[in-house]
Amino acid sequence: QERLVESGGGLVQAGGSLRLSCAANDIIFSSSDMGWYRQAPGKQREWVATITSDGSTNYADSAKGRFTISRENAVNTVFLLMNSLKPEDTAVYYCNARWAMAGRTYWGQGTQVTVSS
Image (cartoon, rainbow, N blue to C red):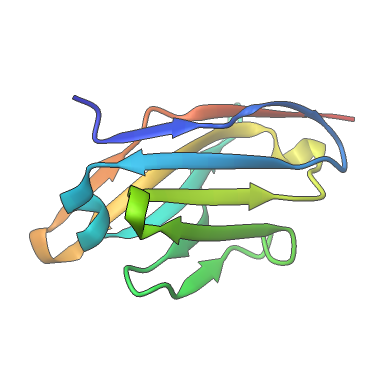
């Protein structure tokens, strides 16, 4: 059983928007800081944004001002709204759950985002 299930990736033109979703197991979601990472071809996976269990957010410089991370606790889902997309945002985006108290980290299967110029 998948613990984190992502959706919402796709192909979009530069300047467009996408919203990624990640649905989590309820125990994991309520206990974890949730984040998004991405990995472009030939590059290492990099952190994009995090939202803590109490709603505090933090962003990589590349995401600031364009991306918004949010969580909807009622449906155990974290979102990443990406605006003003650029070709360099093209990557596989991964959802991450960090359950610090249990010392566990979970990853989703990834969703492809492709931004055409």
